[in-house]
Image (cartoon, rainbow, N blue to C red; front, side, top):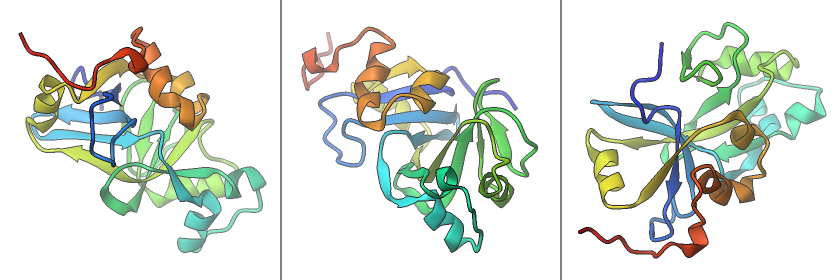
Length: 187
């Protein structure tokens, strides 16, 4: 299934004036956007968990240190008990949604079983919860200057350190966030 709108496969970068502590200085990868609303995964909020903790909760085990110690992110405030894996192509997982030719999101257990065994996708982000917007809500937040958008890329998603992703995402569209005012003006 292809991305649902031009906003899918984009990054939402919190503007400096966004005061909601859940999203302040946040970067969210938009998985879906359409007439039913929008859904995304925050990609720069570290949770207190490691993948080994999540696997143990699911009665799965791994002997691989890189799997056990892999960070788990806070994907957003909605359904924080539910896991999401953003990943590069490869594998035939039970419930995957192709966001683009480079990125998919999977919510099924089978991807974690494969990851525990060292047979998962080449690159992945594990997150608990997601960020959601009702129909028209995200569009209004964009008009209200809460978010800057930028095209997502694999390097930012998988290589950029978490604490650098906010500015690095803005750099993709040539914006220095420290130079922006915290309020919007509308002519």
